[in-house]
Amino acid sequence: MRNFIAFIKHFQVLLIFALLQGIALSFYFSFVQFPRSQYLTTAGAVQGSILSIRNDLTKHFNLEENNTLLQKQNIELLKKNPQSFIPQENGLVKINDTLQRLQYEYIPAVVINSTYDKRDNYFTINIGSNQGIKRGMGVFSTKGVVGIIHNTSSNFAVIKSCLTQKLNIAIVIDKTTEFGFLEWKGLDARRGTMTGVSNDFELKKWTKIITRGGGGVFPRGIPVGKIESFDVIEGEPLWDITLLFEENFKSIQNVYVIKNLLLEEQKSLEEEVQDQP
Amino acid sequence: MNDIVKHSVRFFSAILVQVLLLNQIEIGFGIQLMIYPLFILLLPVETKVISLLFISFGLGILIDVFSNTYGLHASAALMFAFIRPRIFKLFDTRDGYDALVETNIFNMGLSWFLRTFGTLLFIHHFWFFLIEMFKMNEIAYVFQKTLLSLPISFAICVLLQSLFVKNQTGKQ
Image 1: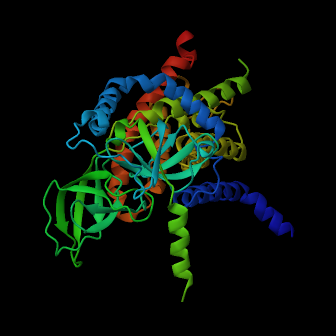
Image 2: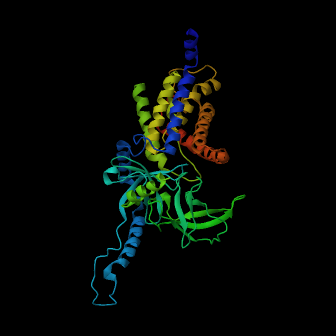
Image 3: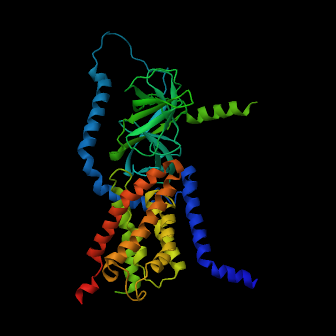
């Protein structure tokens, strides 16, 4: 026993170092995989409010750019306004459309903290579970896909952005059925990769890539990027596609969170199928 | 000024500068600026290694909380604190360290500071980026990030000292 105590005393420093290092590293690697606690992230109340004060000071720097973006979006919406149409046939009775039902709702949010230079980049937004944000919801901006909600507190939420490992958003090449997954190699904030497209398929440069919309997270057709270059992966019948993101993650500010009203229904149906032998 | 007050003020200002200012500066090429190791270096020489470890761990976790790195800064700060006494011993001055003299650039001289802090900061940055990437096939990128960030972080630390640390040798 005395030897044991002497041993502990001798290696005291090393043991405490190893213990604390173990705590820190297990925190880090478990957060990369799945979030357990909101208190040690920017979704926490104190951290969130300090970051939103910072954002209040700096948000006007990009005002001009954001105004142009919103103006463009307004024009798109005005085009769809009934006032901008001339009726071609008179005398028709307008009835309520019962064939279509609202599936997606959009909740506006402001990014109050973001990075693009780290290995995994998370964005913090100024709304949380009080506003109906839940883990796993999709996030996009006027330009394109941004990411998926990673964890939430009552008034803030952290987005796992497109600039992280293992995000796996299902994407599809526009006007085809060739689909794959969005990945990021960790080096360039403007470029991502698309995996899983068979190289039988002929590709063209600068073809648009959009979300596939099958998992219920994103509706189909939100732009992701354009094909910049493609190569054959050696030994595999797949293309290695590099795509240029539509979104500029370096200056992201206004985003929308997607709320899928029929997600529960889809999930419960899919689970039922899995349970049956 | 009381030593404890002085170091507490430094502790919180290191966190605020790191979180609100330096984390937002993203130059590109993977450059990341980190100045909080300077705080650990400037802690008194006679501080016990164990308390050094706990202080660094706390500092790192607080920075992690604000930057969504969740343990990464804490791990690197611990590494810095653990190696500090060894490097101090390695680059010993001729008559040892005076417990009352702070180990800043003015008291210890440029060449000592360059060797000691340079080595420690290199280990800190290298460890940080190594754990962040955690892939052997991206090791070249780890070196690129380390070697590009190191000179800028170092220069900011020298600048901060010339602005905020009293130059006691100059007055005499």
